[in-house]
Amino acid sequence: QKEVEQNSGPLSVPEGAIASLNCTYSDRVSQSFFWYRQYSGKSPELIMSIYSNGDKEDGRFTAQLNKASQYVSLLIRDSQPSDSATYLCAVSPWSTDKLIFGTGTRLQVFP
Amino acid sequence: NAGVMQNPRHLVRRRGQEARLRCSPMKGHSHVYWYRQLPEEGLKFMVYLQKENIIDESGMPKERFSAEFPKEGPSILRIQQVVRGDSAAYFCASSLAGDGYEQFFGPGTRLTVL
Image (cartoon, rainbow over all chains, first blue to last red):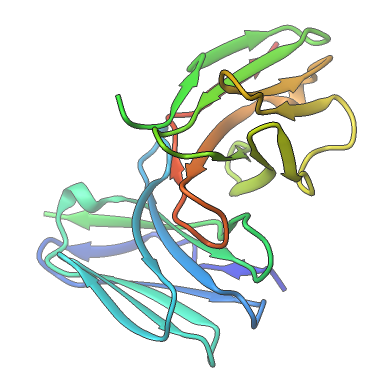
């Protein structure tokens, strides 16, 4: 079992729709969770961090964390073509400071 | 420029040469992380450093790779006697502190080994 799993996609959504990206992790005691966006040929850009169960909203983005189910998700409302990128889920296991990344979900938003 | 800086952005080396990658963290950040992204693969942790200390090098290959973060100057990732399999994007990230603080990535160095 991979430590952090994501569906590779592509996930295709029309402009204006809600995109839902999902991630599961294996280390039950993980503490910190992050979503990064990576455009092709570019570096990862931090979108959201979440540390406790529930929802966290920032503009069009909402991160959701359920530690009991070892599940973290990212919702993108009013998706735009400029949101087309690979979205990386990252988890920081307990007692370490490194990030464990999933392989990413490619999102395509079509006009 | 308050962001993480890396240089060079592109580096071409022949097999057997040495590669030196540099990273200057964001202003005020003293925690530096190196990650590698192989073609069509995910980001993999390599090493975590604070000033003058290696905190976690569990992701570093046992041979040819080393990293440092001196008291003055940038962090350096050094790859000796490069092989074609070292061709990848190497990213540096920095954070204000450890313990799950947010990490911000630099633009990366694309290493090509001929």
